[in-house]
Image 1 (spheres, protein in one colour):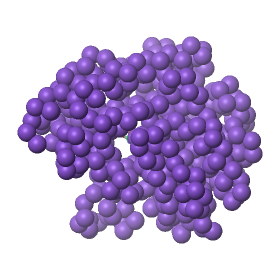
Image 2: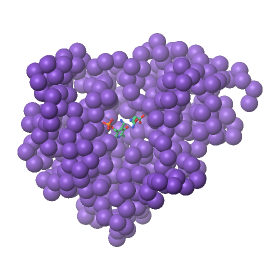
Image 3: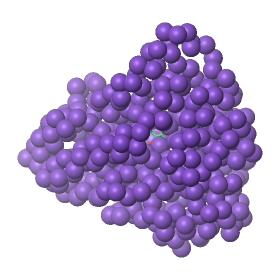
Image 4: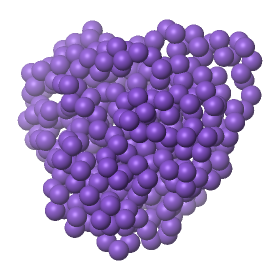
Length: 394
Ligand code: PMP
Ligand code: GLN
C-alpha cells in the first residue's frame, strides 16, 4: 500500500491503492508468466451452463432483469440452500441476486453499518472486506488465524467483541488460508453471536470447494442462527464463471432489505442472460458438485508436493483455490511483497503476497499464496519453474 496521500481519493480509501489482483495479473501478462496469483480457473465449466447463457442472449433476455434478480434464479438459490443445508428461504423477499459476492458483501456492509460500528473479522481476509468496512465508516476488529492450521483462539474471539460490535464477518472455506472451519469453531462463533446479539455475514463462495470429505458448514444451518445470518455466495467458483459475476445473498427479510437498499444504488442489477444459466447450474445433480471438489483436490495434490520440492514451507489447505507458503527458506529476509514482485522476472510465475490481505501486516509478511485452479500441465510447468529458484544465490 502506498504511504503517500492520493490527492483526489476520499480519506476513507487512503492507503487502499490498486488491488493486488489487478497489479499481479497485469504483471503476469506483461512478463508472459503463469498466473497462480488471482484465483480464476483456466478451463470452462459445464457446457450446458454456457449454452444456457448463449440461449438466453439469443432469446432476447438482454434488458434489465428485475431489481432483486430473476425469479428463476432466486428460486434456484432458495432450492440450493434447502437441498444442501436444510435452510429454507422465501425467494420473494429473502433472496437477492448481486453482481458477484463482491457486491453482496458491499451491499451488506454499506447497508447495515453505521459510523463507529465495529465488525469482528478474521485476519487475513479477502481484499474487499477492509475497504468496504472503511467506506461504511465502521471499524474492523481482527482475530488472527495462525499457521500452520490457521485455527483461531476462542478466547481472542470473545475478547474482540465490544459494546460497539454489530456484526461478525466470516469466510469459510477461507481465502487465502484454505481453512475450512470445523463444527466446533462454527458453534463457538454462533454461541458468541447469540450471546452478544450480533449479526453474522458469512461469505461462502467456496462452499462446494472443500476437500478430503470435510463438510462445508453453513452458519445459517446452526440452531438459532438463520434469523441473524446473511449468507453470501456466488456462481463464479462453483461453475468456473468468475467473469460472469453472478452472486447472491440470503437471509431473513429485514437483513436482505438492508443490503438491497445499498445494492440497488451500486449496480441496481447485472448479468441478465447469465442469471438463468447459473439457475440451471445450481440445479445440477449431486455428482456435479462432488466432482468439482474432487477435481480441484487433485490439483491441490499436484501443486503442494511441487511447492515443497521447490523449497517452501507449505501449509495444509482444506478448501478454496489456494495454498499458502512461508518463503523464508528461499528468501531469508521474508519480504513476501518483494518476492512476488520479482518472481515473474526470476522464473515466470505469479503469486500473491499475503501481507496485503492482513490487517496485522507483520503476520503475513513472509507468507505467499499460490492458486491451484489450473490444468495439471500448467501446474507442472509452474513447479518446474519454481524449482529453479533454489539455484539462485540469495
Ligand atoms: N469472497 C471471497 C472469499 C473470494 O475469494 C472472492 C473472490 N472471488 C469473492 C468474495 C468475490 O467473489 P465474486 O467474484 O463472486 O465477486
Ligand atoms: N477471489 C479471487 C482471489 O482471491 C480474485 C478476486 C478479485 O480479483 N477481486 O484471488
